[in-house]
Every structure is written in structure tokens, then in C-alpha cells.
Amino acid sequence: MVEYKLIKKDPNSRARLGKLNTLRGIIDTPIFMPVGTNATVKGIWQHQLKEVGAQIILGNAFHLYLKPGLEIMREFGGLHEFMSWDKPILTDSGGFQVFSIRNKKVSDEGVVFKSPIDGSKILMTPELSMEIQMTLGSDIAMAFDECVSPEMPREYAEESVLRTTEWAKRCLAHHDRSQALFGIVQGAFDKKLREKSAADITSMDFDGFAIGGLSVGEPFSITREILEHTVDFLPEDKPRYLMGIGSPDLILTAVENGIDMFDCVLPTRIGRHGTALTWSGKINLKAAKFKHSKKPIDSECNCKVCQNYSRGYIYHLFSRDEMLGKLLVSYHNIHFLLDFTGRIRESIASGTFKEFKEECYSRGLIKREVLLHEL
Image 1: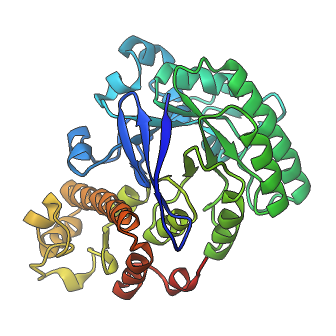
Image 2 (image 1 turned 30 degrees about the horizontal axis):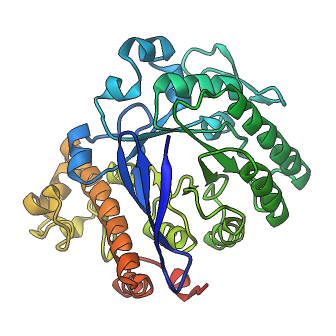
């Protein structure tokens, strides 16, 4: 189980400092959670995750159900033992992955689709999602929900909100509460539907609440607008999780709106393609201009990559398609986002969150529209 403790609120925004107590450790919030879809954060060893300050990581119920499967997970005693990770894990219910699959059939019972592994027919239900996550033994499980695509008509989004509510009830009924369980608020980009979903989901006995269905391709302004509106309907005494965001501008927007937890594959995904996060914004280390550079990726970063390797060396690795280049930039990017959120926590603690945000703009880390928005 988990227990959330609110430590301090920022006087100029909804940003808040907190602690999330779990059986496997205390998580300081706001916190970025690296994504380990297949029981691994791509390109990062588990001991390296601890080096860079990861307090909690994600696993994905859908992918782990397909491979290695529940039989293997039971044999190994759960996900922690399987991947040799003794800190907290949050597992996604698989809802987003299921709804990303084409040629699926959604009904009130669940979702029927073909396995991308062997083509076999699978019926994913709230009960099966709970069974998977209980078998994985994660510290925090997520309710099975329906994430609707932006082009769906309002009528479908309306039905989907009702379906997500009923599925949430079934998740609670089937779950044995051996782990914390978070409910997910949906409602597409419709404020009334978001209110309806939030009212329904927060009326249930969940340990925390997530906002789903955002950052799925919509403009930044819409993400921010729906987020701001939805947070008003979430309780203050439980953790709040915005699913699937990891860029510095979205993280700052989430935090200033009272979000405690967020996750994304962004740092390792862009890292594998040579893009590094720095305090001056993103840089493409595959660019020829870095060929002769003896500078580290970021002179302000104290990660092992920046302490030991140059931009010129990393450019060389990518130019020769060496695996090490991808590993180094992924490591740096994970470290950067964890350091970034650590500095956010420090700014909330010292009452300087607004100044920190302005500094991020002046450095070129975030966009002007993020800075100019005031709550």
C-alpha cells in the first residue's frame, strides 16, 4: 500500500512537495519515473538507475503478459525478483497499449485483439489486467481504462467514460489490495466529460488518481487546458499522476498544476537517436558541428557521461553506429530528468518555483508559451 504526505505548497501555483510512502521505500514528489516496458529501461542497467537517482520505475502489464508471460513471473516470484530491482515499481494496466492496436473490438466486457507476438486471440478485461498486475507484484497497479483517440466523436467519448467507470469498479472488486491501486480519469478533450469521469473515479476507494488520455498528439495548449481543468476535481490528500509526459516543458506544466508523478519513454527514445537534453535545450549529437568538440554534453551536468566523455567522441560513436553512443546519451538523459525534477523539488521547498521556471525559459530549456502562462 502507499500513503501520501503533503509537505509544502507553492504560494504562486498549485505545485506541491510531498512524500509517497511504499513498502519498498519513500518516494519524494514531484517525481519522474523512467519507463521499463519489458522489465528493463532500455539501455540502462538497474544499478545505473540507482546511480542517477531513480526512486521508482514503470513496468507494462500488457507487454509482460505477452512475454515472458505469467507462468514465468510466478516462477520467479514477481517482477522485482525477475529484474533484480528492489525499489518501487508502478505497472501500467496495458490500457493504452491495447487501444493502440488496430483491428480490436471494444465492448463492455473488455477488448478483443490479436497478439502481436503470435496472432492468438486475446480478451483483455479489467479482471485479467488485475490478475496480471497482482502476479507481477508491483507496488502500484493501475485500473484498466479506455483511452480514446482524439478523432473519436463526442458520443463515443461519452460511452467510453461510462465504460471506464464500470471497468474501474470491476478492477476494485477483483483486486486483492496486496498493492496500491490507482484509478484513471478519462474524458478525451471535453471538460464536462472530464468532470464526469473525475467525479465517478474519485468517489471510489482508490489509493491515488491518474489523468490519462493527454499528450497523445494534441497541441500543447489543449494538454495544458484540460490538465488545469481536471486537477480541480482530484482530491488533495492522494497522489496525482499524469500519464505519459516527460519533456521539461510538460513536466513544469504538470508540476505547477499539482501533479506529483509522471513518466515517459522520451529520455531513452531520443537518446538512442542522438538527441541529448541539456540546460540550454535539446542538442543533436549526430550533427557534424560537434565532430571536434571536447566539451561534455552539458557542462552543468555531473553525470558519469559528462564527467568522462566529449561531444566529439559521442559524435564519432553515432557516426560509426556504435552501441555505446546510444547507451551514453540514454544514461545522460535519464540523469538529466531526474536531476531536473530534483531541482524542481528544491525550488518548491525554498519557495522559488516561479523563479526556477523563469530561469528555465531564459536558458532556452522551455518554450515561451509555458513561461507566459500564469495561474
